[in-house]
Amino acid sequence: MREAFNPERTFAAPGDDWIPLDRAPFYYGKNFIRSPEEWRPVIEGAVPRSLDGWAVDVRDDKGGRIAVVSGGGLRLELHAASGEMWLIEPGENFLDNICLFGTPDEFCQMLEAAAVGPHARAIELHYGVALSLCARMQTYLRIALDSGAARLMARKRSPLEPFSYIPLDQWHHFAPDAPATGGSLKPWYAPAVYRKGSDALADHCTASSPGGDRLFSVHVAPGSLIRSDAPADREKQCTQWLVEQLRQYPESYPGGRGGALAAACDAFPGLSENGFQRAYARAREQTGNNNWSRPGRPSKSLRLITSPK
Image (cartoon, rainbow, N blue to C red):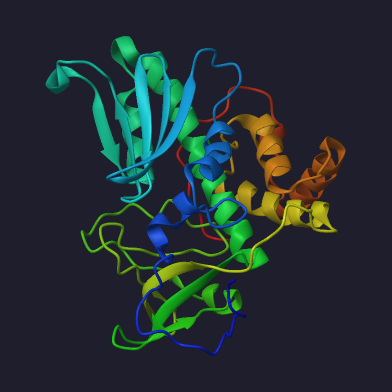
């Protein structure tokens, strides 16, 4: 049994089940994911039912936990241990086959640019699945942090300090540090309200505040187990979530409004379609964004991270 949480307690080192911030979305559903079976629904929910013949496999192997979405002659892989996505064309002639990989933000940009040639349609479909996976994993981590199923831990002010709990109201004042490689991409995994930061190539994720405060080695630790019974005010939580999604994806949600409805019903058990529509109407009013309701083909622009308006 997990001992009662003490927000004043400090730790000399990360716990065995703490996950560096850049990889935390690969490890959370409504709670900390401890097995491939618990991760499978997160992956399956990102694959449209219209994609006949596509398959999902989730397993643990020597390299860590892997989820595989196979379809269109290509294989989309999620590697939880490294926080990477891969697109692979199976076959013996490996050097001539498609092989793209990177952190999710880099990977999605690669896919959008690579959707040409004989595999263009399959790459485009995998690109849509990848965007939907990013959105779903962001959503689940956001809910886990809000509900207490996950907690932020970091070394305050100096990498020599012990780990301390970071309340969300404090975290809101921190912005992401640029990756040590000097790359210009913003972290893909941060819900807009949190604006998390990370060096995606290492375990020492950092963040800074406008006043010069620093957080080092930011991790996500499992919190209280959240049972399957839904919160009393699902529509209110859904409205808050939709406001953030309208700001993160101002043109269209991955998978359209139908994808947003499916993600919301998955994230807020018991939410009805009418409840979603009421929450969506309130979110539109709060943000002034009506783009999701406009007819036409959804934009393919990659807008995984935006600052709160």
